[in-house]
Image (cartoon, rainbow, N blue to C red):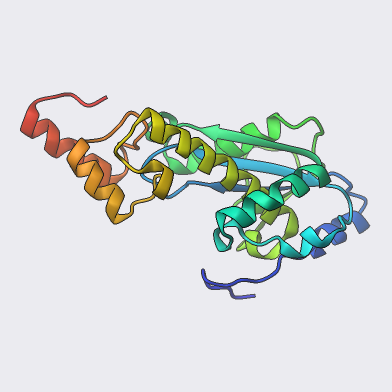
Amino acid sequence: MSLSKSSTYTPTYQEEESLLESNYSLIAGIDEVGRGTLAGPVVAASVILSPNPKGNWVNLVRDSKQMTPNQRESLLPYIKEAALSSEIGISTSIEIDDIGIVNATNLAMKRALNQMALQPQFLLVDAVTLPDLSIPQKAIVHGDSLCLSIAAASIVAKVTRDEMMTQEDVTYPGYGFAKHKGYGTRMHLDNLKHLGPSPIHRFSFRPVKEIADQMQIKTGNKYY
């Protein structure tokens, strides 16, 4: 099935039902948030929903990118209640600079899995597979739009990361982290040029690197 970024498909439980019929009962949906931002961590979530979850909330779940903050926050308690286990994993901006965004994303996902009270028997992962794991897994392109467990994980990860970036706005005022959450908006880039990079910016990402280099040449300061 072909999906555009603006698609608003309702995620289904078909993948999970097929696995339940194959005698898998602990099926984890995994997704990440923050891969493309200029600042802050990558946050991954792993969610094992109860088999065949019921309730009106199920029909309201979407890819977190297609939901408003209020919609995501209102669904989070229902997801948590329906989950047999739900955990997050984080890779910091320093780790992203050290090992690259792909490896850092995989690391965040594995950390989420390692935190789980229940060991999943099968993984449904948005878009990618995780190397060096013995657990069977399936990558689903646009999984956060198609698969209920992955969409639920995307909501958990998004709400968690947004809260983190709102807190960072207090620690590092002036960048507007509470508004843009670290994404490369015009506001963010303008404030970045004015203030220079903060300790939570990703110096390996080109816009940040270019601004840091320019300011080093101009002021002679060594940035973080």
